[in-house]
Length: 326
Image 1 (cartoon, rainbow, N blue to C red):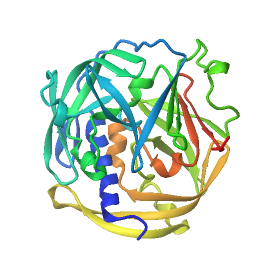
Image 2: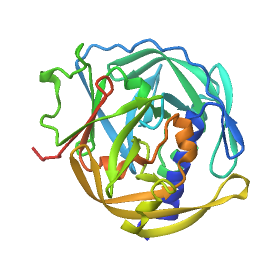
Image 3: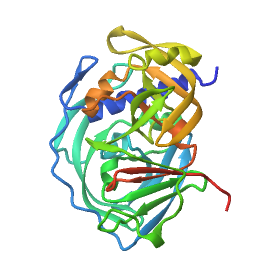
Image 4: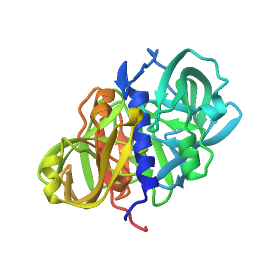
């Protein structure tokens, strides 16, 4: 079996969390999730043009060190999350703005609330105030045996371009010119191997791709430890896939659903083809409702480990570079 059952469960738990946190009065497995109305946070500041941030790895997760007041710790870089999320294990005593419900795959509920965070820093990048959700992230800690203070969502970087080099374990945060471009002398890499535009809707990155000749819309999620596709939307692709594993998972209320782990030959993004792609097939229907946009699949670790990737949130461009030892 190519992946353990635990690995499949971790991936699905991540999906369930995103469904809950991104939803807007959407019932998921009988529980309604409510997002607080959020005032815009102040723009971040920092005396740099390109900030070079060391990253760590916890399995397939990207870990960035950040600081809240005097507390320094690990945060997951998660483009599947819309904003800052804090682990209730360490921040359950924060002042509550609103309360909401959340749920996991096993049906247990966890208290989730919204709070304000002051003096949040990633090295020289400073946020004077951020609105954040506080929820239980112990499943991530337990599965990776690492202390996790929270998740860094897309809204933290929507004024910047970020470049992630997993081969050298480095994150670059670029300030942009008025035209949305990275200053020429500040580019970490040149001559991208692949460039494609993306839609940025409800703080989610959507990239158009073609899988085995079928056009699909994918959410790009650095917090997803594998690629995922919606079973119903890609059912016609199954004859062209090699099924590697099947398992059944029980959800809230005792309902069960099948998860298929498969491989397919060709994924085209932009003008480039990615071969021998691995994917989990499951239902992403409620994920699409939570996103406010239909989603056929999610591009996770199995996709972005293929190269060095860059996200320009202002120009809405996704680039990938070939790794070299130079």
